[in-house]
Image 1: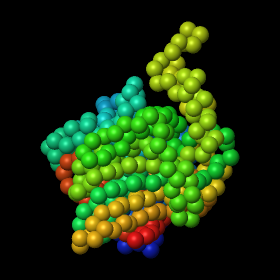
Image 2: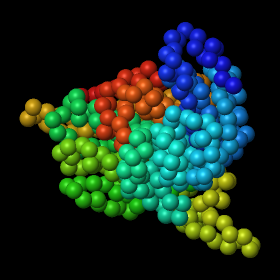
Image 3: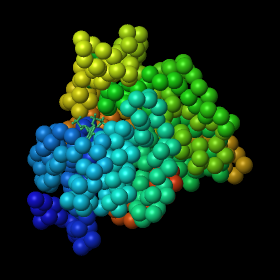
Image 4: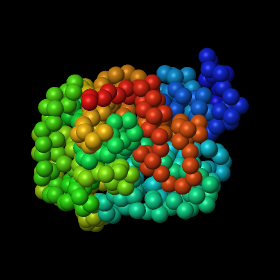
Amino acid sequence: MYNFEKMSQGIIMSKKTLNQKTLIIGAGGVGNVVAFKCAMNAQTFGEITLASRTLSKCDTIAKNVKEKVGIELNTATVDADSVPELIKLFKTLKPNIVINVALPYQDLTIMDACTESGIDYLDTANYEHPDTAKFEYKEQWARDDAFKKANIMALLGSGFDPGVTNVFCAYAQKHYFDEIHTIDILDCNAGDHGYPFATNFNPEINLREVSAKGRYWEQGKWIETKPMEIMQVWDYPEIGEKDSYLLYHEEMESLIKHIKGLKRIRFFMTFGESYLTHMKCLENVGMLGIKEVEHKGMKIVPMEFLATLLPDPASLGLRTKGKTNIGIYAKGIKDGKEKSVYIYQVSDHEKCYEEVLSQGVSYTTGVPAMIGAKLMLEGKWQNKGVYNMEQFDPDPFMQELMVQGLPWKVIK
Ligand code: NDP
């Protein structure tokens, strides 16, 4: 069990925070970071349990957290595709919040178990059906009434992108503009893990996203492009110029609803030549397929088989060097004058590993997940229903980023 005495060294804890219980679901690369960061903020998160499909992965993370941070985590096994199994676990643990960092396929089951059990919910990626490589908020937003009726809150997309990028947009809107007209979200990962081909987060989710058609929003309409059809070179501070490709990305769906006066929003991500060449070859031979095929009397999904062969993203930490830079470039008007602002955050893969034994992509996702949950537990971001990040006051989140390992900068 949890040792509060050790945990509270140097920290005055209120009775309320002593009673908090936190459940993290998913023990992958991101789950590892969330577990570390919640443990480092144990005065808010209280008793922490890490649950996932494979118990040994939870136990390894718990052991590392204990060694590096001195906090005991409870561990549990759960199949998050099963609502009854989740409800059973929730009944035993009685958490105040569930942080979902399993896969997007589990969003709806975990949300439904939360409404059944009256527990706040947070995730980092929007729902996707395993059989359709299309992600959208429709089904999660449709649960708004259920969350309101259950008197609880869901915070959607509290990673980096979506997540911090939404908060950057809300911050720009609050502090720099009367109206924002265009936003470009720029995601650069200049990290090198030394493998010819690997993905920085779950391979299946990553490849489904990247091989899909591109899409951006302009003058009220979505404009579709072929995969990787639009390339633009952006000059990223602390990294330099990089080829960046236009992709569809989920935060655009909520930002077009919540940023007033917006005329265009696009999302760009950098890819190296080796990544793109491998992806094209794999796609050409059918390895990115998500429908079952028969192989020697067995049914297999090519993409799932490929994910089994690729390096586990959680294992890339030790080998990855270089930096990430993710930000938003917004243009609009303030006091009748045209203005542009670039808000960005730079992380160093090796420094992330030093702190929490994970590479930068898991780090930049896991830290905002912890911050979103922290603000919910502290009552700073609280309301009943289903919310996206930009719907809350960005200031407390931006302050937390500065002190929790993701300091940001603004170029005006
Ligand atoms: P991983 O594949 O490394 O980890 C996923 C974890 O979820 C694994 O431990 C897996 O268990 C567990 N899991 C999968 N299915 C189930 C299930 N049915 N029941 C219980 N546990 C399950 O992924 P990542 O850590 O890289 O990514 C986690 C999430 O973060 C994803 O949703 C991803 O899309 C999101 N993400 C968001 C980003 C953002 O900026 N917003 C950026 C990067 C990722 P097992 O190991 O047993 O298979």
